Length: 278
Image (tube, rainbow, N blue to C red; front, side, top):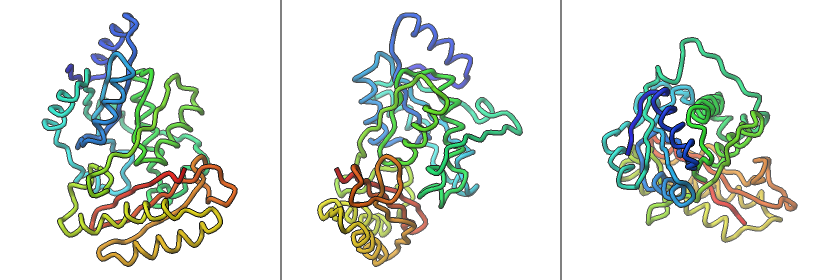
């Protein structure tokens, strides 16, 4: 696996590969890799000649400086995992390589920026689009792979690609879960043993809603789901919503595709999860 830390070097190498007609699949990460990330690498490998992964803890998408500070950065372990997964290129730049001083970015994303995650993490998706746009411009991938766990993020990036007319195909890959149902996340490392047990209420509730889904009782399902999560010790619910899978607007009996999305703090750790009803 080739490892690059500068834009110039990785662009030169990728230009050589493209001149040979090789296709590139890209997986953007903030590191602290787990099997969810590796599933994206595997899917990219199946469809592309070359797979490139970036590891960059992006400061502009953190609302809380303390959250940025404590974000795990096990780069040696991550590098080993990528090598074992058969990744071809790792791009691991320092902040100074991607950001200049006093840089300004604002993309008119519309209402989707302010719903759900956007309400609880104002400015978050401006930071996400800022860094993903930079990475797409540097790497120029044919296809980019993102996990379903960050469902709203995928929709925001899709919106950015449409607005800026970027020549990249986006693929959303299924959530990878632990055996007990917890969605894999880099943040799970912060869960205590007790937190870990309490966190299972999120996936259990999502599965219950899917099994009992009734288009004519969406409000009732949301209330029961919220009550179940709020009744769990150590869990503080931020939202549980059944929405249109294409717009994230509240679902109705006539909504074609519905997704249930949840965010909660378990102990001191914020977790998100979702499940598609159809």
